[in-house]
Length: 392
Image (tube, rainbow, N blue to C red; front, side):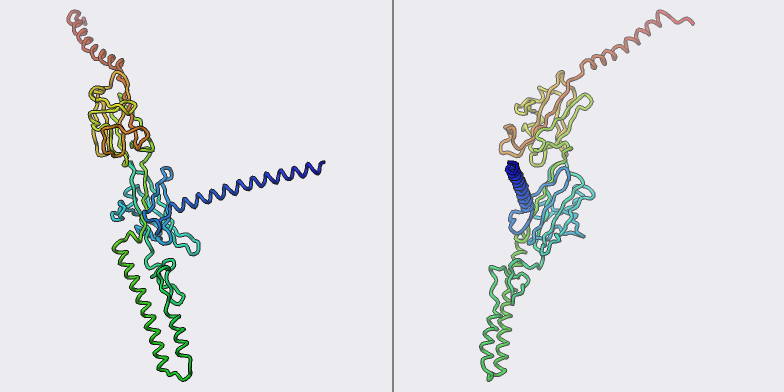
């Protein structure tokens, strides 16, 4: 009986152990698969015809991508494994320094994997500060100049500068010519040296013709690359998000709350790059209610309020606070064909909610009373001096 119970216990423990191992192995496989997919999404290569897009992390202020083996050269060009510039347009034409945009010390570092046969470039962009509004910068991954392409043609079994892809590679005529020479020139000892020389010349002509064909193909390929550089490069779009601490209404925030008080009677804000349209359509004359849906006349709700457009965004000011506190709203949204309608909640938009504090009427009354009491006190003292002269 004891032996039976012991056997059942062993089988139960073994089953539990196998279950745990199966779960761990599944988790490992899934983790590796997700990691491979993540690396694939961040790799720019010949198959990435539309380029790739990556985003800077708001906490680390860094982002990484890979220039694949067939597009391993980073643009702008690196110096001592460091890239200090970036492009400001997708055509990779306008260039500026990373420090100018994101502060001193901003740069991209380029490393090459140590694995044998790997020619890709790992790029890590590190920024010192985030901008006030979302922006996009660009890098390029291009083919290495003079690099041998995968599957290039060969002459006599050796690669020839990557001039022809494998599917277009013409078979080398040298082995066939040699076999022909073997059967034709070594058949009889009576053949003259003239025949041998003629055979050698034929070999040279055939080899030269093949070489010229390769040169013509390479020249045509180079001309095509010069006429359309996009065929030999992959564009990396790097989205740099707005600084979360900035007074910028972003899609990530969805709502931004500001407050006007007796100490601070104005607030400033700006709409992010991709939602730079302000609603209502006439924000200097209209404003939204607290729900950010119903339009109100600003002159009726806050007669002394005004909205001005500045170089960095908008400034909302209130000269005289209302008797009762109230909350109003503006909405930043993406461009639309008709801006007369307020964008729906949950759309690509962000609400700027402005709480306007009530005026401190007690403090104002006390101030008025104090102001009026001063001249009364002065008049009283003057009258007392007239009727009750001071006796020395």
